[in-house]
Image (tube, rainbow, N blue to C red; front, side, top):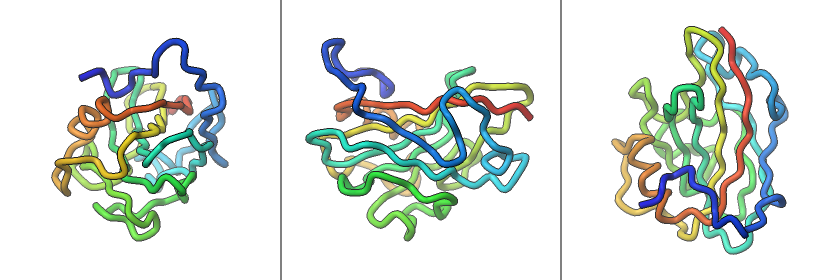
Length: 165
């Protein structure tokens, strides 16, 4: 399958698909609260709708070392935002219907930046052509989710920022 962070065909205009955050700006710094040096809470994120999306997924990726931290997926197509501090469980009650992968630390849900030096991270929002990712459960890892996303991605948008411990 194509890589999970693959973009749509070169002629697809994704400029209208945008992700934003109240606490993180594009090219800016990730606040300590969203890292292992702080409370390690997920940031609030919001995105614009993608035409024809049946659901959305969000993955945190350490771009510096091509390392996936974790994912939340099966986000209802009508829900265009995640609240701050999403519950760290497989099926978070604060994002009804969504599911979360195992994170790099072995837990469920968000596990923020925790590098030994400055790293660049990206919050990638995927617009998907299916409502529910097949073959997932509470043991699925971010890498496993990424391999499934690659087959169902309509478009992606990114919010990129740096964390320096």
